[in-house]
Length: 276
Image 1 (cartoon, one colour):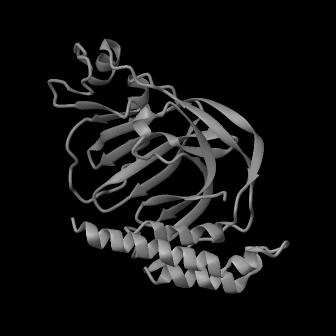
Image 2 (cartoon, rainbow, N blue to C red):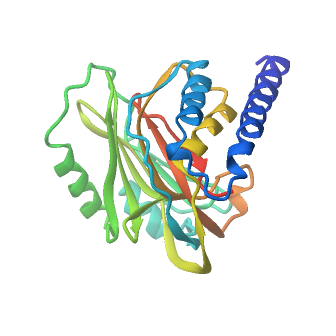
Image 3 (tube, rainbow, N blue to C red):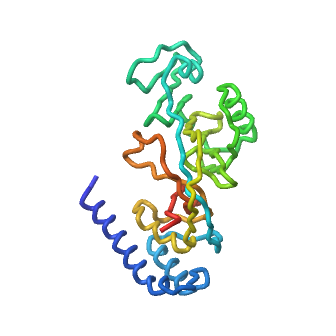
């Protein structure tokens, strides 16, 4: 990887973003400024995204939200005999500081950062995908077989591409998705080939509520992701999210903020800060 080139791209993106936000600060300083009514600002946002060939093919929400910040606590996964038998269906003895196990069928169980569980059942089949109407039944059977509690989870997102598909279930709090608490099902024409899970076990509202910025104000922050280009935005919505950075393995409790989630037509999702 050319790190000098990568750094240059990142620095350039931040400069462009800062210049854009600074240029719009005159509008923001007005006490009754409402960006949803500012056509010039909206056109500037479209233009700056268009420079990276990012197209908007979605309704941009007009409203802001007054929501609590959530203090969330995560399920810390204990690697023990019961866990290994539950997901690998064999009696396997756990080993201290070992977080990857396999069974005689070649199925692989991994525990990542103490909170993420990944079960790989087999290699993906690369045939062209035909949407399988029975996949929901297979998902339900998998959850029942593994005795996974789905209370509070709903199907939040589905994306089917040429040779792969993903079904995402997320935990809901007051009708909003908590995107860090999820179950991912990866499927092909043969059914589920991989499963990933991370769970929030308790939620407490922070007393003081916050008002989100408008979605149109958040969109320029896509520029901080240099890999996002030549894409089309399919949906924009509010969700709860905590950034999973390099320190994620040390996190047990963390605040989850109201966040603008941008979903692209290729299934990519990015979370943009929803509060200043």
